[in-house]
Figure (cartoon, chains in turn purple, red):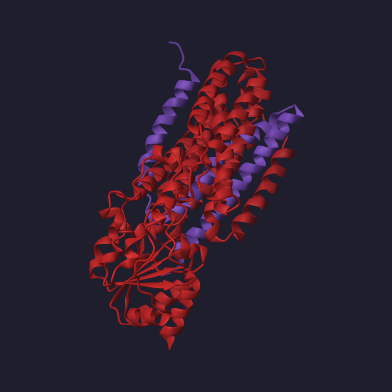
Length: 96
Length: 464
């Protein structure tokens, strides 16, 4: 049997994930839409995975610099996104 | 770490991210969701670091430390009123990071298992081209959004002749270039794609007016997700694809909710120009109609003797940083036995959920903050509606005047309250540039002044 191309496999995963995202996000309460944005912002920086590969495996300096730049930017986002989300959620939970 | 093992670790991270979003379905579970999100991220980065092909750690560790310090510092220091700008700036970084990763993949495909230089798999080249294009559009688009929100450039829509045909030509050019790039693997074509996409990002967001910012931010949120998914396809990494799809879907849903909150179609917003000419047109007929002006003492007296008060906050409250004074005013009224509630319109503020965060910051009880459809019916049985920094979202002409630019937009039925107290700087129209019928009603009392000062004066009057 011929093997499935990585693209088709990726597309399968992608479409299913869009559906999961659709149903999960509709359940998010409107009061928490701002934290939703900051947390999705943080997790979309999982792109750091690609950045780490570039920075950690490349031979060429230019590629390393691209990788390094991407690692820095993604880290700003990951830390920044999670910290600001934590701040916001802390406020929602404080009273009571 | 073997390929299968890391794929499984990535799968666990994907599940963590899904649960992180699911946690946001209520304030109670949200903290746990956030923790899961952080665990997912640590697992993802750790797994990648442990992969055998990663040979040097110097750049990576330095990058994470530098980025981590900058990110944490900014996120700690930022005032929550500036949240929309912060999010826009963060989106731009995701976009630029995607461009960098795609560039790195082009220069050294072997690091990513994409074949050798000069013979990268054709499919990977298409994905690379798409990834870099979406990333670049996200980058410059978010920069423009940031500049508009921060007030660095005017929030007015910037429109010039031939804008839409130009964008269309750029878009078609982009598709052709990606096709050519996939066939030739030419580096100059790659940078050409990057350049055109950067330009397109600018041009797409420039014509969109300030009032549409909640949609723009959500849209860019969505783009940053698609960019991550695009890179995921390039690297054949399921985690990136799943996360990108989640974020993309989330941003798309938020955009949809915001569009519905304004009764506009997404196409209409992308084409832009709202809040420009209409503003000039409707200003002409507005003046010279009688309206009543009240003082802080009047407002204090009316609210003290009311049974129930609904507070309607808007962006003006955020600008004036009035949320703390407002909460204090609410507390005093509650002590006097008045029922105090807050009504939040979906597009109040400059990003989804903006008002909720600001009120939570001021420690307004979560239960007394209600959404449009939860509270709209109650205005009829309410003694006082206290509108502070909101305008268009209370305009009754959205229900009655088919000629109004905001006709059909869901609004808060503020006019049904026995008395409407409207805090405003002056008689100028709102962001959409539409005059508000509410000002001229018999039961409306205008309170002119800065939102924060007005609240403080009312507090003083209440305490006397």
